Amino acid sequence: MEYFLSEQQKTLKNLARRIAEERILPVRAELDEKEEFPWAIMKDLADSDMFRVFIPEEYDGLGGGCLDLGLVIEEISRVCSGVAVTYAATALGAFILLEYGTEEQRQKYLPDIAAGKKLGAFALTEPTAGSDASAIKTTAEKTNEGYVLNGSKQFITNGGEAEIYTVIALTDKAKGARGASAFLVEKDTPGFTFGKKEKKMGIRTSSTRELVFRNCLVPQENIVGKEGMGFIMTMKALDRSRPGIGAQAVGIAQGALEATVDYAQNRIQFEHPIIALPVVQNMLAEMATQVEAARSLVYATARTIDSGTKNFTEEASMAKVFASDTAMKVTTDAVQIFGGAGYMRDYPIEKMMRDAKITQIYEGSNEILRGTIAVGLRKRKARQP
Ligand SMILES: Cc1cc2nc3c(=O)[nH]c(=O)nc-3n(C[C@H](O)[C@H](O)[C@H](O)COP(=O)(O)OP(=O)(O)OC[C@H]3O[C@@H](n4cnc5c(N)ncnc54)[C@H](O)[C@@H]3O)c2cc1C
Image (cartoon, rainbow, N blue to C red):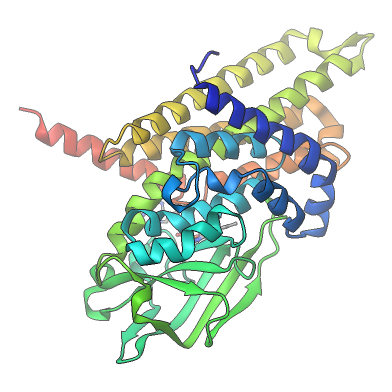
């Protein structure tokens, strides 16, 4: 399919593919098996200016948009989505700063992120606040010295490895979600420690960890936006980030499709390659069609966002839901076509199926996002004469 990417975008996509094939492919099974954080690959991505893609030019970035970021995420995910989410979580961590930060805050943090010297993370989820993010309990009490954070965050990507954390905490407990604010918290801040490191089903090279705040004093100037805006900024940041999860899902599905076509051409049963069987051909055709449909929706959504459209909540949700469901279906069918071999760790297919699952869960579960899409439909209907 021709997606009419610019020359720059084609170059970016090709470069990301080359890094994925040359640097990630040889180590992906080992990284997954050992659950080892991919520091060497983060350095390769930094050396190739990949962290500059989503940072504006005035802060040493390349000024790319949602589609540019998505192209990089897709290509890395085609080989290993655990690496891709490690890269993408830094972008998510930077979105609130990019959109609402002061000039001083941006000057202080963005050039280091662009250079890949510092990874970022975004911390919203807590043990009692997952889908219901408004139930967060972490507090940020204002004092003469700054804000004092107390509480914990759960399941935070890049936890323990990132240097810069965007943390959502309540500055006014009585107001609930309307009393939430966003803070930039540096890794070595006293009172900020790391708890449980999760052992996961998939994306195992990525770090998912608990953050603990005990009387953690954050300087006054590290609040981003105004007090009470934390929840609104979070929702906007997630809208911007969800096509990235869609791109992750498209990359996983594409990788699975390619590996399956290869396998089906070489696997001989009943004296013929199994790709000659109509049932296998039907499955492959369905898989290829779904991957292309998901990619079309993700790219179209990213382009809508890059055009400057203000409200894209439903489109972003649709792209994430459709692409992640596609990744789950395509990888499941891929394992089926591989047969017993697909169940074994000798082939990358079982990893792809494990990796696909999380795309249906994080950054808003698909059940929650279907609800979001439905609310949008009802609002549109209410506006009709
Ligand atoms: C590997 C990993 C990495 C993550 N990284 C981050 C991160 O970097 N930063 C961060 O802040 N968070 C992160 N998360 C948290 C993630 O966003 C949440 O796990 C997700 O939002 C779901 O919340 P939950 O796990 O508490 O599930 P729950 O909210 O407990 O939901 C359980 C089930 O109930 C369903 N459900 C709940 N409420 C409703 C409803 N109203 N309508 C319909 N269905 C509903 C859900 O869809 C789900 O199927 C990560 C999670 C994982 C697993």
